[in-house]
Length: 254
Image (cartoon, rainbow, N blue to C red; front, side, top):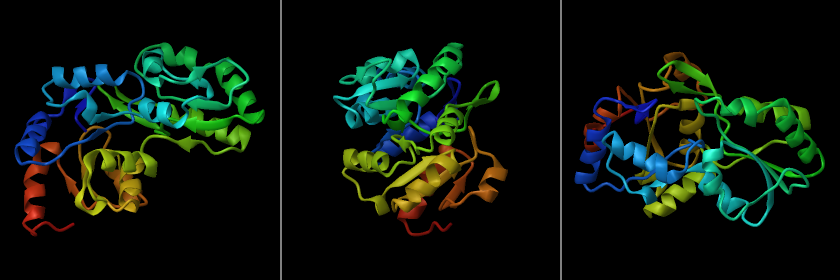
C-alpha cells in the first residue's frame, strides 16, 4: 500500500503528510515479518514517509508479547530475531512453534527447508502450540508476486491437523492492539489496504471502516470473489485524504 520493493506508491507519502496535517492519528500496521521494526521505519522514512518507530506495529512484536517466557521453535528470517525479545528460542522440546514470513533473499530456502519444517511438524505432534506471524499467500515485489510463508503454515496445518493461531492481520487481537494504541473506536477508524483477503474481512468484522486501494497486491479478480467487500475502493492512498474528508462531511457512500 505504501511501496513495492522499496519504491513508494506515487502520492502515498504526501497523503500521509496530509492526514497528519488534518489532525488524524495514524498507525502503520504491517504483516511484514522479515526485518526489525526500527529498520522498517528507517526504510519508510528514507523514501519520504513521516513516522515514528512507535507508530509502526509489527508481527514479531506481537509474537514477543504473546509468547513471552515460552520455549519457541521459530522459523523466521534472521533479521527479526532481535524483535523476539523475551522468547527462549530452541531447536527441540519447544512449547510453541512460530512460523514467520519470507523475504526476497535466499534465506527462505534455509529457514523453510524440509528438515526445519519436519522439526516443526514433530514439535507440534509432541504437543507444542502452533503460531504464525501471518498466513499471507504471497506479496507483491518489483519482480511480480512472490510466494509467502502462508503456504508452509497451511502445509503444517494439513499435516498435523492443528490450526495455527495468527498473530498478525487479520487477527482480532492485532486490530485491537492498533485501536488501543490510537485510543480509537472501531466505527470511527479506517483501515486502508491493498489486501482484500488478509485485511478487509477481519477489519469489517471488528467494526472498522475499510478502503481498498488499487495498488500493490490489488487484483480485480480477487475483489470479485472476496468474502467481504470494502466500504470504498480508491485508486491509491494518494486520493484517500480527499475521500476521508468527504466522508466526514457526510457525502461519501460505498
